[in-house]
Image (tube, rainbow, N blue to C red; front, side, top):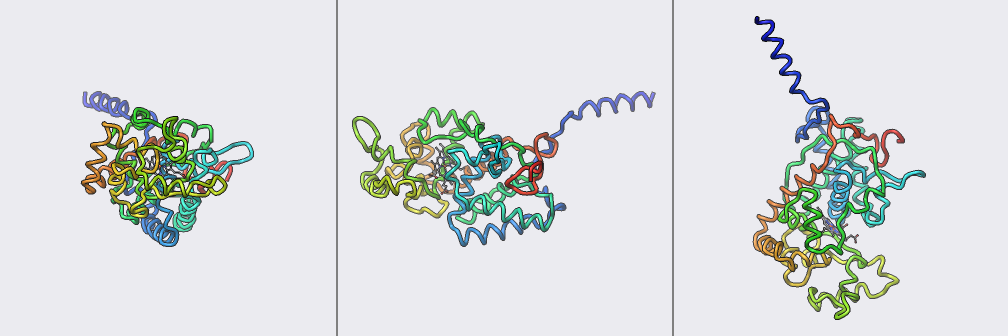
Length: 331
Ligand code: HEM
């Protein structure tokens, strides 16, 4: 009798174990396998950002682009080969600055000396992004760990996976909504444009060819539009010219971006959509008045973005790369 009872219990127990068990991320993933993980990331990030102040913005954008194309799996770090054009060489990623790639590879080198073959490039990218955001004044948020690096990186997968500055409010909301983000989370994430630069080509339509009625977007403050026109006037130098995303406090991760928008100081057309669309304007006004609310929502949205379609221990199609710019099969 007891034997039968035990047998039934065993069957019940076994049947509750899924076939492929993907392990959830956790913040202490490297606690025993690589106890120096936090220290190495912290020290390398500090050194790099102190010398090259554009690293934070470059890495934050790099991370966003990585996550949006096949999940946060560091596929964006892989280089092209003779028979494969990789994600990083897609037109939309060409302007990603070298500083972002460089900091990840420096941290990887240091970690390989300390705990070889243990830490994924995807986790390095997630953790360094958080540390860099904090270094420029942004909020601290927990970074879950245990991502695996992707095996595939193809430029063709980038097409349609990243947002464009030509999007209207409906398209922006759909883009983020399709990826599980609410309108408020979208507005909070776009607060990333409180740091960094944009190239003239990303906003020159607003300056010179806005519409048949007016060459300049009336959504831009006139004095600001004039300054940008001067910056971007010469087509010969245009390709190398960039403007600060946040003209007031360009290097500080604060809520100035939201204060700029109602004044016509939003740089990209999509930034300006946030104040023209009645669904997003109240959120912009709320963040402009309440930096703490922005920090809280940005932190939560970053935690969500950092976990987007991640591969973990139980998932096929992931590995810990030996070097971040190539899958182990070719490295
Ligand atoms: C509608 C959504 C978005 C659009 C259309 C957009 C577009 C752009 C464009 C065109 C640039 C300038 C690139 C260049 O000229 O090199 C830029 C810069 C930047 N974006 Fe976005 N972006 C969006 C959302 C986001 C999100 C969600 C994040 C982060 C979570 C982000 C982070 C950044 C950062 C940090 C920069 C500055 C990069 C640097 O200085 O190197 N963006 N974005």
